[in-house]
Length: 346
Image 1 (tube, one colour):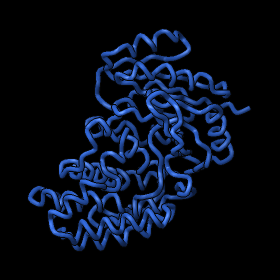
Image 2 (image 1 turned 30 degrees about the vertical axis):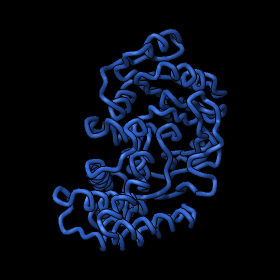
Image 3 (image 1 turned 135 degrees about the vertical axis):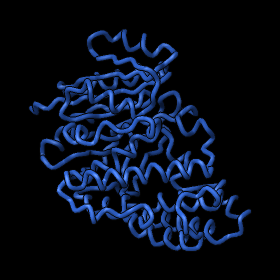
């Protein structure tokens, strides 16, 4: 039996009605060496009382509200595990997933991250039949170091569907919590792979609850210039950190592509939205809509895990938003924007 300890950190902010399910799913794993931490991020509901009822079976850390990035940082102050899993309080781990994760880490010392699929649940915790990412798409797998350095993108999963090397997390954390009140999983997803191997498994490892109050869904998922600028700021910051950590990971910083030259569909999507909706405050001077549309279509070649139909839809979006008159482009963006706020829920 493996001697590894797995820390499962459950983040809760006013999710008391779901929290018990999340804690139970962690405590009922068939792997024995598990530490369960509940980080309450300034809840005003009954979350703290629910967590306290579990006694010494969990470690409760109650703090002022500061967002997702702060939860990741605080977790590392208390984690005993060799492997760290972050679980949103409205999600539930599937039975046996921790044992499966440990097997993969034990089999390859170069693994820094394991990711798996999510079964979408409704507010009552019942499966909807949907899976994220869809089964016809692949997840990034293997040695992705140069790919991440040069293009940033690979198919990765949201917070609850990952397990990380604690040693690597200690290298890249703490993150600036004020920059990552939400979307902190992107910081981990974009930087962790430069330190080693990513392993993806086809198994569904977590139930991913959609209930109408998820962080990004609750704001209507509106695509705005402000959203796009914040997205670009986040991507740009992660690029700077990849550049910073590259020598520590044994990589050449010259292989790290800057935001301006990055052929990444999500980054180019945000650039195009920002430029079309608010050109006066667009942060990248010299951008032209037609050129971004061309870059966007070209960037889709890097999405080899994504089904052709999905890539074709994104190509049509780049062409429409980059080439159409302003009113038409705005209607297209309002109807659907890939990697937009609603896509980034939770």
